[in-house]
Length: 256
Image 1 (cartoon, rainbow, N blue to C red):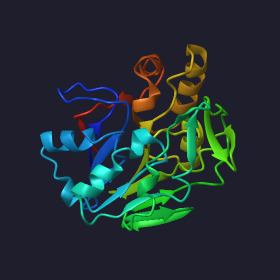
Image 2 (tube, rainbow, N blue to C red; image 1 turned 60 degrees about the horizontal axis):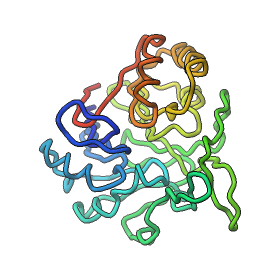
Image 3 (cartoon, rainbow, N blue to C red; image 1 turned 90 degrees about the vertical axis):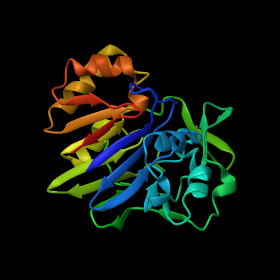
């Protein structure tokens, strides 16, 4: 499997960066896109890297936040065929606090290319999406001020609109998560993959809690590649306490 970071909060390779995430993946002889950042920047960076997004065979939006699905319109313009898989709850009323809407562009929700999923969905050989309604909570972190509006009432997010992609290739189980809002430790405990790639949503956590989480993650024989909402300072703190943790930035490719 080869994964290239099209956009992320940081860049070490001369490409522009933004708060968001987009990953181009080649595995099992297929080409796919996981998340689309918050703007069309992922497409500009793909062009700079020589990646033709019109050849993408399918795409996934990990959850219903603007920094992962904000580039959806641009992708639909660039690619005329690929279905886009997202949770049946992705177009919900997602807010940061009470005022800031952080959801997807609702004018796109009836597009015929969108495939809404729930539970377990096999999207191609070796590619499966999981929404994990039964996931156990080993470590509770709360919603960090993120809310969902239901029937006109704001309440703390339960992140049921988040799903996870498992790629199985050459005997490896590689899990891709956008933000791990339901808890990186909980997700790790549930799947126990060989490789875990994605944001951990630790950027607001203090050192003591980070130490605890790092120790919990490090008990597993899993290689971690993190990014985006983990936070660079938080990553540096955790790196000292984890044997297999790396950070991936815009423009970077990894092969597994």
